Image (cartoon, rainbow, N blue to C red; front, top):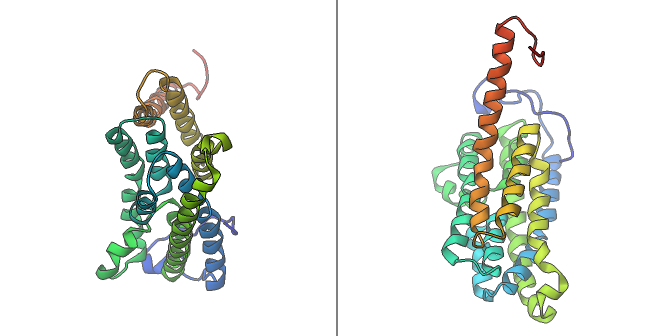
Length: 259
């Protein structure tokens, strides 16, 4: 994002958020295009990876057109490429994509779109559109950011998916090109900027360790599902640490002070 300042806090209804802090439409469009183009081009990697995992051109393009959530798409074709059960692969993709439902709860209040447009807009509720929309100071800016990001990313992602799937045939053996690493590389590139605090970084680190440790002993796709346990584990440990600190302060000590 071009601006590094924190978004203003809203004290009223969504229409009143950021009153007096209008952002030029051109700046919103510029930020939205930057995200949409940068991420949309990575659809090429998905197209190549999907074709290399054995999916047909029609299946690959259908995933981008209908599913349109990169992490879930990469998780699905990655598990299939590793020989995983299709149902297990689909389950892993589903659990990765379910986060978009929570994004939708927030965005529906912020955008306040007409009912007839909501089913169409739901297709564009993903990490990138949420990241561009939420910091906007006004509803108008939020709508512009959401629309431009969603339209740009959807068009480019599907176009580059098609190009990647077609190009996979010309490349031949995709494993020889090391393109099997494209899926985790793109996913990590999308995930890294979202890790804002220590709790999120620890959760991500623990999830990675779980996946790496379980890969040799569990079927493909299952380690991704198990890695979801990292979040409740970290939250429980954080809660215990906070309780311990509170007890120390209540006893007259200082946080971190030994007995």
